[in-house]
Image (tube, rainbow, N blue to C red):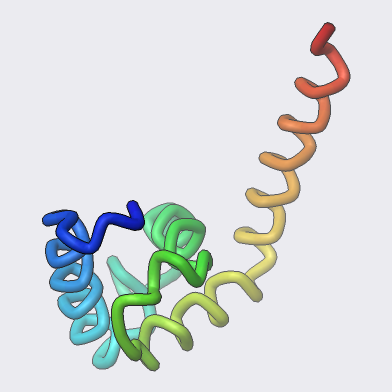
Amino acid sequence: MSIDKDNPLEGWLAMRLGHLEKALATRKWLAADRFTAADILMADVLRFPAVRRFGTFPALSSYVDRACARPAFKKAKDDQMAHFAAADTQRP
């Protein structure tokens, strides 16, 4: 998010994080009562502290920790980083 304190997206993001906090306070994963691609995507975004700096979100923090500890999440992240590293070696 921007440094501009009048950025209207900051209020929107805080509201959306609050909605996620409520949802994840009562369930372990976002969809289907099991770990899915939705959790890989959401946890990848939420794992950055700058995204969660708009309040205290204990359920989101637990969710991110839980998701990031999963082998599927680790594999997806490692594969993505390997892809970026390979692309970096091909740059002029």
